[in-house]
Amino acid sequence: MDLKKILLLTICCSCIHNATFAIGEIPAGVMDAAGSAQNLNVHDMDRIKDLQRREEQEKDWKDLKKRQKEQKDNPEKIKPKKEKKDVIKARAEEYATKGVYIDKIRVAPSEVLTAKEIEDIISDYQGENLTFDKVKEIINRINTLYLEKGFVTARAFVPEQDIVDGSLYIDLYEGKVGEVSVVNNRWTKESYIKKRMSAKPYKLFDIVELEQDVLNFNKYTPGVELSANLKPGEKRMGTTDIELAAREKLPFHTSFIFDNAGRSTIGQLRGGVALTHDSLFGYRDKLTLGAYVSSHSNTPFADYNIPVNKKDGRVGFSFSSSYAHIAQGDYKMFNIRSRSYVYSLYFNQPLIRKPYMELSSFSSVDYKQATTSFDGFDLYTDKITSARTGLNLRYDTKRGIWYANQYVSYAMPIFRDNSNYVKLEGGLIRLHDFGHGVVGQFRGAYQAIPKDVVPYIDQFQAGGLSSVRGYSEGLLIGRSGYLLSGELLFPIAPASVKSKDKKKEIPFLGRYVKGVAFVDHAMVFPFKGDGPGAPGYDANDVLLSIGLGLRVTLPKDLTARLYWGFPMIRNSHEAVQHAGRFHFDIVLTPDYDALLKLRHPKEKVPKEPKKIQSL
Image 1 (cartoon, rainbow, N blue to C red):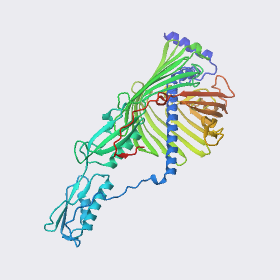
Image 2: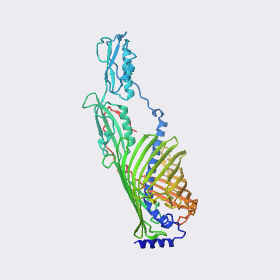
Image 3: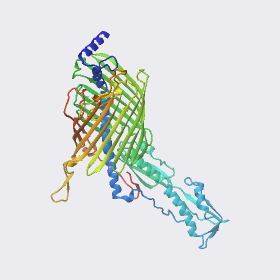
Image 4: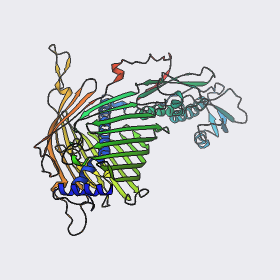
């Protein structure tokens, strides 16, 4: 077998002109082809992440515009002020108009108010004559403090009493929660919802806390919207029952993908499918299964994650695998095949989540393995075990949205001594509204690894639909690199036209089709050897393109991106030089709620509830 390998490499050397030995063993052309096949796993998973990123950005953009419209239409609702009202009238009929001398005021123990807060109020009234109005003033100040703390069912009052030795007693009633129930929760377990509410039976009732819990639940739990109804306690007098009504979307999702983002050597046209269940076991635990397939490659993948705290901190496990066979092109004769696996155990935790800002942390432990074979013989196997951590940020502004991320990972030399390096990677995206229907997207990304020789499965790649359009997919690959892209989305026709009677708006072409103009640029920094004779970086390590395209959004959740990219720099790595290159992807994501007309039964609302408006 060793002799056959030697003969095979000898043939490689004789068949490839101007071969550069990147790592001193195998001709660069063959290694590039093998690396391209080995890097398929990363390429395809990056495509999946790109589709998810686009979906999230579209949702964030719609949410931003919705909030801006609401603030414009209802500016007074941006910062609602709590009304300070008297809760009760204190009963002090026994006091004469001239008042009664009060030397000391005693207040019942409180679970809400501190001794200092109470003392700060009553100290102003001790040692003087108190009239009915003065006593009422004390009661109102205590009740106002309850309201400010969110305890709307708590109150102070003066019970019937005889004033002895100038002592006045003020009693406190602090309302408590009765029963907490959940209705209309078909896909989410009742226990999951209750655990995310601070309100517990016979605990002090805090309406501000309840409002915040409901708002947080709706923000942190896509696909479920809660509203809270309050009513007098049925089992115990003096309590408040809380009914949490859920409105859920169907948790099943499918996405069908068709594109030409494959590589010419293993199949350019590809199809993919992703199946997702948002609440597999009722705990908003998410399972995704899918695969990308071309004529000579396939990439199955799976991901499962489950919330572990009230703020949507999630622990998850993901797996992806890829198989590629170079069956076309100059290296077909070598029968190059590659198989790779990536396993990841991760934890994602939102740190700040507000309507205009979200900051989250991400940490993972990853294992990657890739094997490349020539004509049935395993030539080499890369094994990488790494730890990764970083931050993700979304920040809304008046004219758009910022996205930023930064990660650092360390590959540990557990299985291979050469797998010992630090990798820095990050990105920045700006969505900007220029007005008149023109939206810009500006994107930058980078990866930096200071080590010379790095396994292909961990390298940066550029070229193709998701990076530099106008070039073939994954044309350049290197240990470090960066990407810059600018894109303008603009209307090419009116979004609607008036009907003949000018009473109705009729949807027109501009609602479904928009024009695109873009500029893409990237550069990679591969290891080319060291020493005096080592080649430097040149134009073949740089990509630059411009182009035009169309963005199509049709009813029933069918979207398409059509681009024609024109390379501005000729690259010798291209097997076939093109004046321009056409890229496309078509994604169908059916809305089963709409298609199947799935509707929950109408919620039973009590006649006189106090309803908390959900976001």
